[in-house]
Image 1 (tube, rainbow, N blue to C red):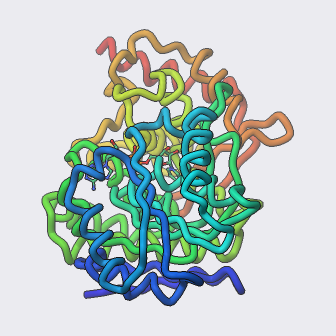
Image 2 (image 1 turned 180 degrees about the vertical axis):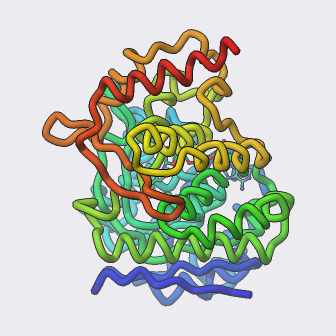
Length: 374
Ligand code: NAD
């Protein structure tokens, strides 16, 4: 059942291991990477309250690896200047050395924050990802994008810094709140929609069982997503071309996250879910794809317990197309003043376009917001 995916980046290449029971064997996998038998685990309070932290500490101890643990408050607010400062100072107080490894045990927040700290602390340390959310296992722990947020927008301060190893243990998902699991599932669906129609059809058949807890299906899905991401990252590490396709749904999604204040009103994956359906609607409006696709995707997202329509977002009645468009203009995906959209010609055939007019986007948003009145 166990799967191994290689991210082929020359002397920075690394493995993603996907399995059950991996955390118990973490010492075996991590020991060969270390230059001295010491590592610092960084996690958040929610993960620290699960058995996973103790399991990881025990696994390291079994291989005589000494470890310190830094436990941060949970939540996106940690990806801030203040959160970053607190983490760096805590790590420096532990006297971490440049050749030490940090271990990010957590979701995308911990992964992004620890990865960014590793990129700059002592001018660059190594780090290992032990992702504990589905989103982190299929997306954020792979590919080396690390960042914190600015008041101007999300992930605007960051670095490309690849981990040395990713241990994706699907057992860790057992303690994840169901809503977080579903939000991560949106990113799983994304891989099918952007580049693998067979995988998308597989998800339509198996998504419910996967969400209900089937370990074999979870391993298969996580490994398949990681294979896609690994291939794309190896071809375009710094997002100069194909890697941008991974942003399917994100231009709309980030605007919705901004408008809902990056709060519990809308989780990142939920924003991506609505955003992907909107991307297919926009594609259909522009004559790029069949108009029947967006409703098909909305059906699968809704059946998976995700918001699929703009009007599914709490407070959508107060949204205006112009304000959502303003949020999009602050996105990293603006190039030479043009909004860059990931659109699709079919399921599994995403394309990048920078010729979408603001008027077309506004018209779509107005039409979709009007659905709330019906
Ligand atoms: P998260 O890290 O906030 O985790 C979600 C919640 O689940 C948190 O409350 C966390 O404490 C809790 N949690 C995590 N694992 C748990 C477990 N096993 N059991 C119980 N509770 C657990 O959120 P996320 O959805 O994993 O990540 C979102 C972040 O990832 C965003 O900041 C986003 O920008 C970033 N991201 C980065 C990339 C990238 O390529 N670097 C890609 C996608 C998303």
